[in-house]
Amino acid sequence: MVNQRLMIRKLQGSSLTLISHYLPIVLVSCILCSGCSLSEKKRRVITVLLDYSASSSEKVLDNYINVVDKDIFASMGPNDCLTVMPIDQASVREPVKLVYEDLTGIKFNRKNDGFAHAQDSIQTRIAAYIKNKQPVIESTLRDQRIKRRDYLYYTDILGALRQTDNMLEVTPQISQWEECKNFVIGRTHYTSENVIVILSDMIQDTPECSFNSRAALNYRQAGKYLQELKSSNKMPDLKKCKVFIIGATGRNAVQIDNIRSFWQTYFQMSNADLQAYGYNVEDKLTKYLASNDN
Image 1 (cartoon, rainbow, N blue to C red):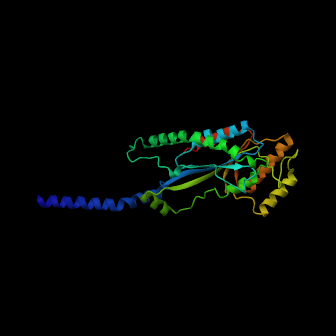
Image 2 (image 1 turned 60 degrees about the vertical axis):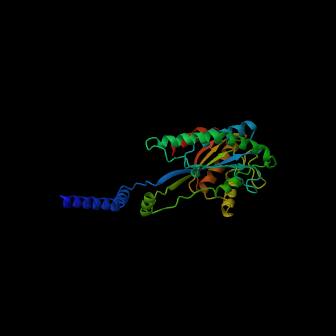
Image 3 (image 1 turned 135 degrees about the vertical axis):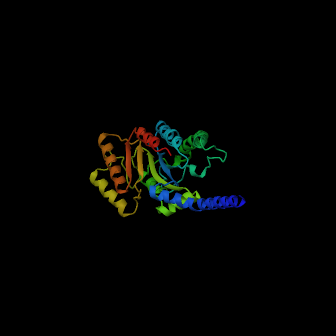
């Protein structure tokens, strides 16, 4: 009887050893066969270019700030990043991040979160963080109108867009084995989706290029200038980045059409994905943000 018990214990010990040894291999095999990416999480990298030039009235600027604060920032998930940069005379000379919020660096989960309600707890903490930060962001963006008053005389949208080239994230390609390794050791692999939101009338106005004439640039003039930008390496590679333009307008129908045509060609040449262009198209942005919750 004693020998039988010893034998049973040895068999049980051997079974546990085999399970602990082969379980990771079985899990890895399951991941490989199913094509799942358990350590992968989506991350939205949102860059907002906000027009502070004199052409933006206080009422228009208030609307722009509401888009940033109440639409974009309020929709951010735990892996998202928001950067706000100005459009004005100093877009190139003094580029600055007016707002920078990377939620990936903030720990929203807790060790004592129960498995069943962990996600709800995380969402509650994110909502609280956003609610606490919203007044700060709103105040910061409003104060910049006064602080940047020396730079209001020109509208350098092209210069601001050149700065976004450094803001875009590229998702590194990893093998299935690397994906499995990440899963086993608990390392998260982020897939980044880049988004640029431009809050502006889109009337470029600098000594080098101005749309302020009655017709702005016609088709021939626009084509020539765009080729000059390309050949002088002043056009960024936006790497399939999604672009939303809110506030676009003009003084007359011809000017509006020519400006729209210029920017449509610009974003096509810069490898961007223009999702929305118009004066009042916030609904397209909010629809996108709502459909990409992470």
